Length: 387
Ligand code: GDD
Image (cartoon, rainbow, N blue to C red):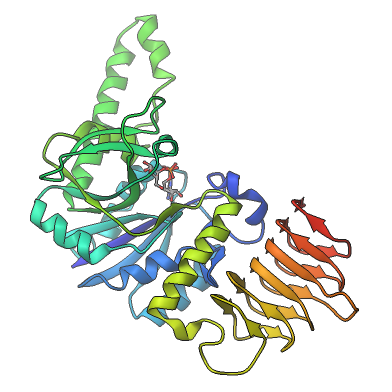
C-alpha cells in the first residue's frame, strides 16, 4: 500500500500570496478552474495501490471540509485534512500525524508540497525509488543558475543518482539542480525525523546542566524539539549516505508563491488538460457559445454571452456572468464575478485576476491587475492591485 501526504501549510505561511487569499486559502485558489491542491491530488490517483491521501496544514478544518468530502467521492479514494495545532515544519508535520499516515501499514509514503506546479510523475518516481533502494527519492529539475538560489540546491551522482550534497536556498551558488518539493519515502523517514528531535532534546538537556553563558545563548536560536524541517534537518545531513536519491524531471515545473505565478501555472495546467482531458476545456463539448481562443476553462454554472471573446489562458469560476462583447485575455475570474458590457465600448480584461463577487461595469478596461473580492470597478485600471 502507498499513502500520499500533501503539505498545505497555513494562513501565516502564504503571506506573499496575500492579496489573493483573503476569501480562499491559498491551496484552494483556482488554477485552470481547479483548486491548486486538486492538481497534486489527481496525480496521486495514478499511484498504484494508493490507500489514502492526507492533507496536513494549520488552516481551520472547516475551510477544507467541503472540498475534501467532494474530492473523496469523486476519486473514490479517502482524502482527509488533518490540522496541526501549530506549525511543526515540513518534516515535523508528517511526524506529528505518523500514526494516521501508518494506519494502512504502507510500504511507501509520497510527500508533496502543495505550492508547486508540475505533472507529478509519481508512478515513475516510485519505480525509480524501488530500483535505488534508499530511504527516499526526490524529484529534481535543472533551472537557470540565476533562479536556483530560491530553492534547495543539490548535487547528485550522475551515474547512481544518489543525492551527494544538499543546501537549502544557499547564498552562494552550489548547483542549478534544485529540489522540486515532491518526494517518496519508506516509513524509515519517521525514524530519521525522530532522531533529529531526540538529538535536539539531548542538546537542550546538556545545556540545562551547563552554566556556560555561550551555550545558553545558543538555546534561544534552536527550534522546539518537535519542529523539524525536511530540507535543512533531514536532506542536508543525510546527503551522501546512500539513503537519498534523485529523479530528474524534464517536464514543466514551477513554484507558486506569488499571485503572478498563479496565472502562469493556470496556463500550464490548462495546456496539460488540452493533452489529457480536452473535454473539460471550453469549446471541447461542441456547444456553440462565446468565441474561444486557445485554452479556456469555463465553469458549467457560469453565463458567458455568445458575443464575448475569451482566451487564451482564461479560467472562469462558478456563477460568473460575462456580458456582451466582453474581451478576456489571460485571466482568473473567481466565483460570482459580474463583467457587464452594454455600451458602445465593451469591458476588456487582460492578464488579470478578479476576486470573488467583483463587478466590472461596462466600458471598463482592466489590464495586468489583481482585484480583491467584492469590488465594483467603474473606471479602467492598469498595473494595479485594487485592495
Ligand atoms: N502542514 C505544514 N506545517 N505545512 C508546512 C509547514 C508546517 O509547519 N511548513 C511548511 N509547510 C508546507 C508549505 O505550505 C509548502 O507546501 C511546503 O510545506 C514547503 O514549504 P517551506 O518549508 O516553506 O519551503 P519552501 O516552499 O520555501 O521551499 C521548499 O520547496 C521548494 C520547492 O517548491 C524547499 O523544500 C525547497 O528546497 C524547494 O526547492
